[in-house]
Image 1 (cartoon, rainbow, N blue to C red):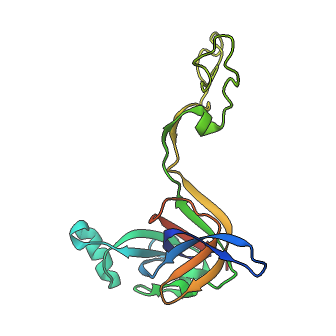
Image 2 (cartoon, helix red, strand yellow):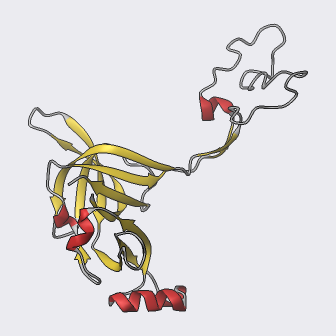
Length: 208
């Protein structure tokens, strides 16, 4: 499995041969630098660590500065490890860019979904509420209802669908098609929507 780190730029649309409007997401994919190569002899597993998006040196710890200096690159904001046969083709300090992908390929994309704050059960879990505002139920339209029996077990079971923090989760969307590859600007135009807000980091992986 090979992959790259990218940044979600925003959404646009393309037209196919039949004139159908296709919603697309534009991703700035790389260039990423190999900041570490992990081996079975030293680390117990094979992987490569890629770094993306420059970071100010004054905002980087001394230990991290030494880590990036060993790779011969500037400090990076986002670091992700990749596994598989892909690691055998890379060396420390090497650059990975959008030439890794071709138009028409399918990729799996991982990102962090938009945070929606503390939400009730109707928005968070799709509860229907009471549905009718008769018989004195003036303030129960969006309430969760009963959450358990009183005598036995005398507690609320773990995992009960209740109000709470919503969003901000790691989400992976599989089998999204790459419609266009811009090697000059390191841009990918991907069919469909990706998790997360604009300018958020995403990880693109493809199965070789």
